[in-house]
Length: 238
Ligand SMILES: [Mg+2]
Image 1 (tube, rainbow, N blue to C red):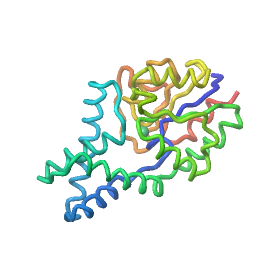
Image 2: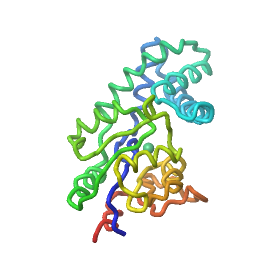
Image 3: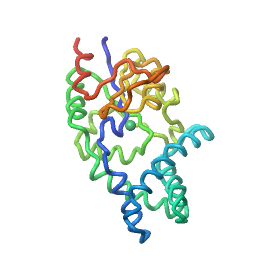
């Protein structure tokens, strides 16, 4: 299988984000002087709107900037509890997002191990995310692994693209100057990661750490499904 590059998704592929968004929700509620009893419910509404708004905005504009989507979906989530805040105020809570993700979100140990292993095999690495470039870069720096990656691409005005748009995958291949057949894409989302990688003709890997994906079909079927990165090291043995 002679692969020359691995492109990673960031969140929940490299970085463990478990429990962080709920902490951010708690801080938002505290700032608004609201009861923390609402935290679970507000968090789950915020999450719901985050994904539905992301697809709606991508359908309309072709891409979706994470920071704006987080604010927009928070306004909608709070409205469900009869709490009205402006988009501008919601935008200010991005600070909480930066703070908590930068400090709490760390690479999974098996991801770290793979990231240290691949350069020994002469494999290039990059990151293509639907999240926020600055927060990803900060976390890579904190973990002292940023130097391993050729680049980080996430939707922004320079790259007005959101996965699974095939163009963001093609763009990353041309930056790496490596063909799709020699590139592995690994992510935790069958829709944005696996479908996009399959469309681009890359070798697609789904990391399903929490065993949530039993039945997938069509372009969401990965070439390889794993529950830990230890299970994919063998594909790089020559
Ligand atoms: Mg992810």
